[in-house]
Structure formats: structure tokens, C-alpha cells
Image 1: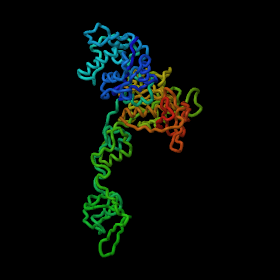
Image 2 (image 1 turned 120 degrees about the horizontal axis):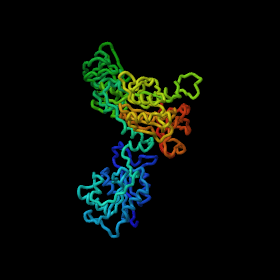
Image 3 (image 1 turned 90 degrees about the vertical axis):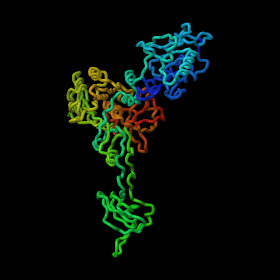
Length: 605
């Protein structure tokens, strides 16, 4: 090859099929896709120009499509480049050999050659285009002669512009050589394709579940009955607060300048509209009572002096400290009717439920709470209260009875004690289908008229001889949304959408791994089903670089250090919860975290 090669790597657009996630940063098989693609491109081309948000350059306007991105990348390549590798960032299996094959198939440009329209060519190809294992052209895996690519872009620019063009438009009038490259041309455009490629990063779990799970239907419920649900629409006040002018303190309603003659009976909260006051008069008033018409202000008892001389009404005089004070609350002081008190995605906690009542709302639109049942597996597991001595090879259930509290902290509404599923194919099939009870009641209802939204299964998520979950899901026609996470403990976990609308959350069988997965992925399941928005609680921890691990996140017990920080346990055992004793939170340590990176602190109980 005599031509110099450069590469244009498109780092992704809006990634709508990935829920808006940063496609370039998504890791497949433990490595970000952009890193894989850039590494392959750098083996055959210099320079490599990345195009898109956070790249070396960007198409104008942003998100105007791949053709505009290719043009921006081409403009950034130095003039010495005459072979242009064009590649998307979503090819996790791409390697240098594939790109070498495309370059070799195209060959160097002819000496002194210039681009001509296809109808005038002698059949010499202007681009080498990859074909995947399914026989499909991969328009964003190709090598071009630079003059041909530049001329084709100029032609499209003149006839309708580059923005919004399908990338195949580049190739319509070109003479191509197609190269079957097979698996390296596999592209990843959906979370299902990411999940099918192996365990995903813990940081990607929430986005994957939001795309893969169908949210619960929104229902209108009285505010007190909706506590724990997530607002499906903004919470908008029907009434102002307060609805009418009221007194904020026990004291006196005053009209006009003082001193004031005391007149009329005391005004109490809950009574109908009082009569009016005229200038120079006052009336005793209780906290929350309606302020009479004509009142200019209210002063609390300690700011006035009341004198009586026996010959007429008592006189109310303001003390010197009353200057500028007013305990009258005008209508709408806290909010006006029509004011948005909370946006969709906010959890309706008791305080917000109370505010909804104050705002005159008799119902609110919410999703959830998410109703769940817990089912344990393992023929070796006996009830927690089994007396000693235990039979050989048997253990007590040391996590199932506790998971209700852990899941409640994550946002679930759990019912009853945990059920148990024997380690048989038939029992697992019946659980997945909901055809039978689980020992904790029906697998379809947590109570009369209260359908189960999520079945939380402890154990059976591995691939051992007694783990029948995956085959049962396949037989039932379930859709696996998550199958493994790059985290310790708790990586062996599954989330599946069952055909009847329920969701299965499969947790590892080891107690600490189960708690870790319930705390993290459990929260993500609630977020996906309800649209809940959460702000992460972040902290910095000394010595984090010694606790982090390459290629996987870690979940570690976190204890307050007494001075506003946290202390993490670097070594934990998963077969029991002893290492969680005294640790009210878990710290999520990112993959390969550096000393100054923040960790997320999550309450587990």
C-alpha cells in the first residue's frame, strides 16, 4: 500500500434505542466499545478522528446524522491521507485484521487518479464495504479513496444537504467491492444486544432496565393511599395555600393605625367567615382562624399590650418590638392554585402526600408501589427458626426473612414471609408460570385484588446442576432483560419480563450477594417500573484506589467515620451477613476507580 490511511470513527448520535445512553462508553465483554474500535482503527490508520459528543470534532448541527459526521471527520484529516477508514463505534468485535482486509481489498488509489461519476468509470472500486455474517451491508464499516468520498459528500451537499441523510446514500452511485468479514461486523444498537454479549457494567443496569421493562400503568389514588408510589404526572395544586387569609399566631387582628379598640368575640380556627373590622378596631384571633375583612395585620400576644380602664372597650397597643412584624398569612402565601409542587418521577412520600392534601387534591396519578413477593430456592435451605441440630448438609435461611426490609428500602412493597421453591424443574416451571402457590401465597397476588408486580427469587441464577431458572424462563417465553453484572458481590443476577406482565428479579443465593443485588439492581427495577428519578448520594473515600478492581465494580459495607465521611470494608465474605453488622449503607465502587473518584452510598436497610 502506498496510500496513507486515516480513520473517521463516529461515536454515536442520540442512541434512542439505548434510552439515550452514551453508546460509545457502553462496555461489552468488559471493554468500552469506542475503546475497541479506536484500538482497531489505530492499528491501520493514523490519525484516528472521533466524531460526536466528546470527540475530536462534531457534525454541524449536532445530531444531524452519520453522513454529516463523516464529512466533519473527513475535514479533520490531514491532506496526506488518501485512504479513509469509516467506522461506527458500536462494533464490539472489530479487530485490526478486519480493517486490514478492507484496506487490502480496496487497494491504493491509482497514481494521479481523480474521482469520476460511476457511469464514467472503468469499474475500479471507490470503496470497500464490509458485509456481516448475515449477508447485510455494513455502511459504517468501510474504506474509501479520499477523492471519491469527498466528491460524493460534495454532491449530496449540493442536492439536499447532508443532515438527516441515510448513510446508504453515500454508496448509491459508487462502484464498490464487498468484503465478507463475518462476526467483526456485528453492531450493537440495543440493550438486548449488549446483554446478549455477556455481563454488563453495574453503571449500565438502570439504563438497560428502563428500556427493557414496561412501566406499570398509572392509576389515580387518594394521596394517603398512594404513599410509596411514584408520580406519573406533575403534582399541581388545586387550591392556594392558605386558601384564605389566616392568622399564623394567637394574637389580635388589627384594622388601620393603632391604638385599637377591642371589639367582638374571639376568632377561632374552623369557624365560618367572621365579620369585618373598621379602622381603629381589633379582635382576638387564634392560630389558623380566618382574618376578618378590613384587617391590615395580625400581631401575636407578646407584641402587644392590652389595657382596660373599666369605662369602655379594652385598648390594644403595639409594643416597640412590633415594628415591621405581621402574623397575617395572605391567601396563596405558600403557593398559588396551579403551582407545580413536584414533578413526575418523584416518590410520593408521607410529606408530599400531606402537601397534596393541603393543596386540595383528592387523587394523584402514580405508578406503584411495586408489589413483590420473595421466594427462596435450594433444597438445602431450612426455615430460619429450625432448631438445632441441623441435618448434615442443611442450612438455615439467613437472608430470605430479611429481604423484605432490604427491598422495602429499595422501594418495593413486600408481602408476607418468603416462600420456597424446591430444586425441581416442575416446581420452577410452576413458579415462573404462576400456576401454584409458593409457600408465601399466590405467585400472582400479594393480597386480595393486589397483583404481584415482581417475583424476587433468591438463588438458581447460576448454571449449576440444580439451577433450573434459565431453562424455565426459556420454556415460558420470558424475555431476559439482564443476565449478569460485572460486580462483586452479586454478579450472578437475572431480570426477566414474564409473558403475563410480571417481572422476575433473580438474586444470587449467597446472603451478602443477594443483599447487594437487591439494594442496587432492585432499585433499578423500581425505577424502570415507575419512572422514579433518583439523585445519587456521592462521597469520596480515602484509599479508594486500593479497594477498586479493574473490569468490575465492587459493593462494600460502609460505616460512618464520625466526622462526615465513610469507612469501607475492603474484604468481605458472601456466605453470611456478619460483615454488614453496623454498616447502614453499601458503597458502590466503580470499575477501576482512582483515588479521587466518588463512590455512591446506598442505604441497604
